[in-house]
Amino acid sequence: MSRPTRRPGHEQSVDRKAARALQRVTSHALGPHQSAVVRIGFAAAWLLFLLRELPNRSELYGPGSPWSWDMAQQLIAGNGAFTTLMWSDSGVWFEIVYAAAVLSSALLMLGWRTRTMSVVFMVGVLSLQNRSIFMGDGGDNVIHLMAIYLVLTRCGQVWSLDARRRARAARVVASGGSAPVDRVGPVLWVVLGVALLGTLLDRTGGEWWVTALLWTLWVSQGLWWAANRYAPKGEPRALLDVLANLTHNATLVVIMVEVCLIYATAGWYKIQGSRWQDGTALYYPLNLDYFAPWPALSDILASSGVMVLVLTYGTVIVQVAFPFTLFNRRVKNVLLVAMMLEHAGIAVLLGLPFFSLAMIAADAVFLPTSFLVRVGDMATRAGRLFPQRLERGDVAPGRHEGDGSGHSGPGVVTDTVTDTVTDSGTDSGTDSAGADPSLVR
Image 1 (cartoon, rainbow, N blue to C red):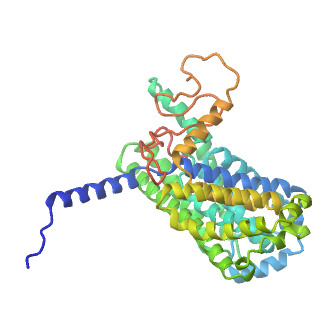
Image 2: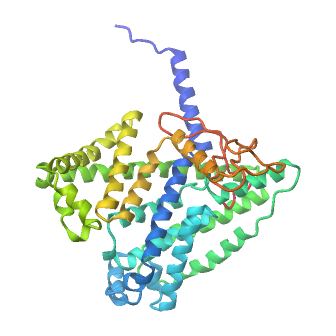
């Protein structure tokens, strides 16, 4: 029997699709809106937690903690965890680290120098959580992981002060002027370089890969600045862009897989529990004083056996089914809304707001781009409830600037690239790091 011959046209079509996919992955940082929401959500969750625990900070992570500095030092010497709080047992040093964690969380949420603030944010999260490992819960574990992932993403492309600064620089260049000289970036680079010297003095056995990552990021940032300064359109600059885009896109996939694993493992473990099998699992936490910030509301819900049964089984079904619905956008969006509502209910009924906010921020990586763009536009319009007189060069509310830099004036900065909405909820378009890519993500 003769073998079927392959059609040359079919092979060329496959090659063209593969080439387009490779070109898209290497030339664009996909999902700018999704990564921005993840950045804002996790930075906000950690910031709110640190502010709420501000009066108790010393008992949680500082010199007044029951988990003393000597006990923490012995544990870290064995497990190799990274924390800057082990560099000194001074109360002043603890206050400096805590203040840096609060400040970096706020600045990362706003998107100011996201490349730098994401690293400082990660150091703050690791330092505090690894200092007192018994103070956390599931939400802290998620923040712990996402703080590391955010460092590898270009999460400041949209909805950030960096995006606004790039837009203003682009307008200056478009009008015939020269690009503004950035002095803050190099100063931050030098300051962080001096701070990194502390890793060379650390004798507590901290995780070596965290130290290697910090030094690698610091060196790569210097190379990025040099390439942008002396060869902005040369091959070194193009190579760094490709590497940054590949790292961002790969990390975004890792975040998606991480979220799926969290729900899949949680769902399958619940199936094995007898209380989840008979539909009564939700009843017991509703009757615990520790998880009842609104006792009257918990009593009303716990008194309805049908409601407890539906919510118990519904939780298991949603968690187990979600990873399998990613290939069907409509079903995935329905379950995504259900999971977010579930976490909102956990925040209200069980008094776990930071855990819920962290999980909602993780779920946001699957939100459709079209929805996020509409939300950004509505937020921008909400910031302009009162009509203002437009000056020359301003843009009317609800309209995009011609240079693709987003909305002008106060409010949320919209996407700096031309969006092409796909079934998977990612974007394509022109790279948004054009004006000042050396110091922003």
